[in-house]
Length: 536
Image (cartoon, rainbow, N blue to C red):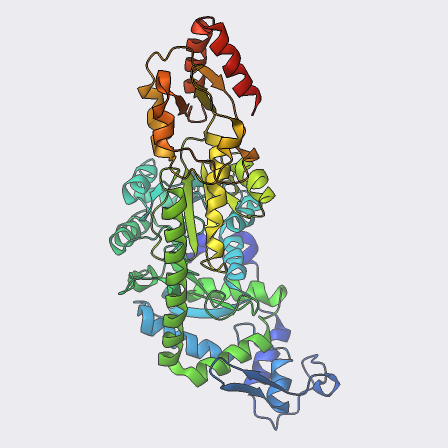
């Protein structure tokens, strides 16, 4: 691997801080050393003397006075040595990277602690990207990543994906505009890296299969680009065995992997770790030296003591408990979606993570419904447009995070029935010969009308005499607006008929024109229909 291709001029210019070298020497030195070198504050001036942290189950982590001095003092940029060592062994156990024992300059696996995985990702991006560089990812994507990438001036190439992640054939087609040897010519501007969240990606919940990862890694080798494997939901995979990771197949040393404790221990601790080839990890560490200097010592020491107490088996047992919780949360929101949104929306079952990605059928953009109508009902969701480079992009999707709400609270999806129908149901067609009072529509006794039945109605209404188009804003209904099918079909002249125009206006307009042609057929009936229209 020619790592110089992936280190821009700014990162190449970074040199190790002499002061930080002294800090690393001090950490490894005996207590008898008399140090006049680093500018450390005297711990006797710190107001915090000790701490006892109680764990679930009753065990404790204790910070005595000496431990507290370490927890509150500057520490090594790479991370507290005991934690770094523990995590390296964990990566070997879980992924067994082929480059574990490579020579350092040939991509030997290395690891550093970061202030959350996003900190490591941002520093990796800033290490690699020059303005105008091509990079690969799949949209929709977590907006925080877009906001980290766009200011760097890179050209984002979006790779199509489905519920099983990036589609290798689509990636192959994109790469076919270059020849494999073009990576050696800077003027050809071949992609520098592929960014991917392989498990339970935010927002779609998609997960890459092992076979697809193998195909993608082969393409990375062929066209010489890095793979940035951002895997914060790795430990939240609901099915075992877990899919192999890109790190586990990295024979070249071309994978930078970001892991996080946020989803399994605590998001507020802000501790993550980045694993990758040593020449690139070293540059990330040099960046940290001059930015945050090191991740939070207190958080690192707390996690380190916890992991030492648990051991690998105890840690993975905790992961299983957390995964069980999120699997139950996933199942609860799927049950609520099936109960309330069938026929109104589409989704697939996420096999990892904490997100359900829902497509509202019949509309082109969910933004107004989510940001206005849902919020009025005190339901907070994220419209699909928030996960694209251009936030004005139309998207019929919304993201529902099921991590913190109870199963009972998930029944707020009942509100979405009303909200979505507000945007989809555009007209009610009423025969002049049959009249239903407006108060009937708000009755909670009628619970049978489904959107599936509504969609079929426009094709069933051939030439109904005297059809009146009544445009209704369904948000005025206090309860779920429903109508009994037998009532709808029971009146003379087809009784009452309801229809959809799919958010495009076509169905309502065509039937409105039919009514216009026949509205003078019966003046009396027309008058009654007009009264019905006004009642809404």
